[in-house]
Image 1 (cartoon, rainbow, N blue to C red):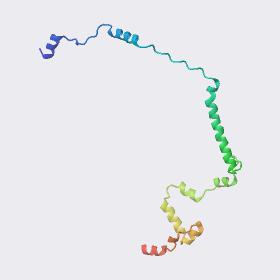
Image 2: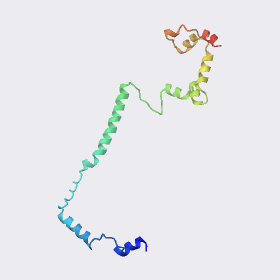
Image 3: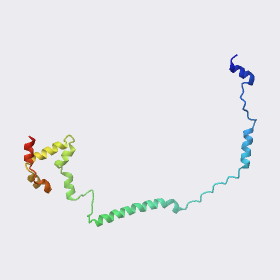
Image 4: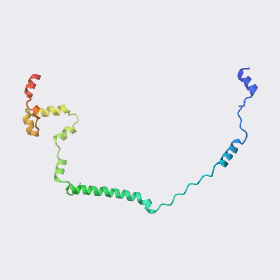
Length: 154
């Protein structure tokens, strides 16, 4: 016989912890008897018609306020009546024209370096560039001779 069988023979196969029959039923009844009575939840009062529609009225008031603000801002800015069916002439013209800068942005294969090279090839001097674009160099850069720099670079 091995040790486990000897222990089962001496003490039995049942565990030593037993609860008397109906113990938990009795405990539950005793605990319930000692507890104070549970108060019932108060029934909510019926909502009036105003209380039911109030959120929707507030929502409508908010949208009316936004519409009024937009109308006031439009009137204050001096804008004329705008319509998507009949846009002003300048907007209609801008919508139909395709500028060269739009073409550069539409063609993603053109890099910034290529654009810069193309623009710099069109101008021989800074004076021409300034004349076309209305760009003026800051005083500390006006005396720089770019041609001299190009000669040193080569």
